[in-house]
Image (cartoon, rainbow, N blue to C red; front, side, top):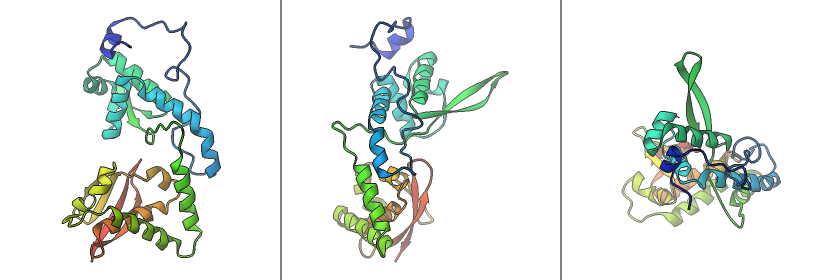
Length: 256
């Protein structure tokens, strides 16, 4: 078994020159970030399968690197090397190596702030979409995008995709939910994250449909319809306010 990262921080670097390269040590797979190109044709996404898989393996195979990346997903704050090292319980040089690898893989990006003269301090922030691994490969996002685009071509397509969302919401709804937070619980159990604000806004800090919505914006109407279905027939009308940063969106709830 590989040695722990704490041990790795104390021992000299391991000579891996005689070993075949693994996805963790390869140059970044593909080009750019792990997002799909919103302007690309649906059929082009299949060409990114291997690069995306190699990126995910490179990010997740090491326990400490995985822990660092998941902390960025849990809290999108920008962080410096010292803070990351402190949170992960490792030496700052080990933290720096993992952060730079995550930058090379396209999951993080670097911002700079004023540090020592001639040596600005590095800050790191999340820039990638979700880490996804499927083997054998399945591309449900491509299917979802194609269906959403088909709705857009229909007469009254916006209302129809919203009604499709309501149907899903009604099927997931918890009987007797007495609050918006309780009504949203089925989506939260699926991995969505929501914050209910006093002015009637719903901030979705982790949208389950974010990647498809970035390429087919009418998916936001599907999401709004799903919330309406969860709230029930006498609940509320929900308007989409659009994206609010990576993987996030917002809605405005109008009580009837």
